Amino acid sequence: MNDLPRLSLILGGARSGKSRHAEALAARYERLGVYVATAVAGDAEMAARIAQHQSRRGGGWRTIQEPLGLVQCLRREAASDHVVLVDCLTLWLSNVMAADNDVEAEIQALVSALEGLPGPVILVSNEVGQGIVPINALARRYRDHAGLLHQRLAAIADHVVFVVAGLAQVLK
Image 1 (cartoon, rainbow, N blue to C red):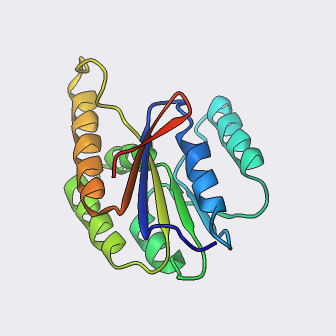
Image 2: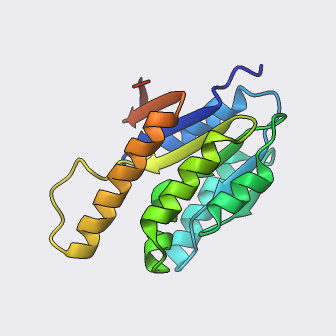
Image 3: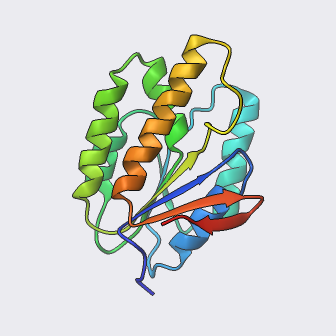
């Protein structure tokens, strides 16, 4: 069944079930494609999390580890005959910030690229703006960038879902 929206944004908190929801959504497509993972295994615990994600989704995916070059990866990998799933944008954002890249330019490049890609793309991201105001400036900048990133993506997405406790709430 090839009834996926062109662009889906799946938001949720940590351990909300957003990745599982995105994977289930992608499974509706006749042909799984590319799983773009933005995480970097900086320690043993993160490596274990990555391994858990990989084992859960099975072998139907071709996985690409892309912590920074997301726009170039999407332009190279998107195609009308398969789905691309990106998990997750907030990790990509933290990688962009840690590399001291121009966050606004990176977000604009992502939004521009997404508007012209062929085939379905599913984006997964952590909603980080529902907690308290962070105590330090870096964390506040991160929260602010994530909120603006989500707003920009939701504006162009065909399908937006917020996942809470494993329950998907369709927003758009």
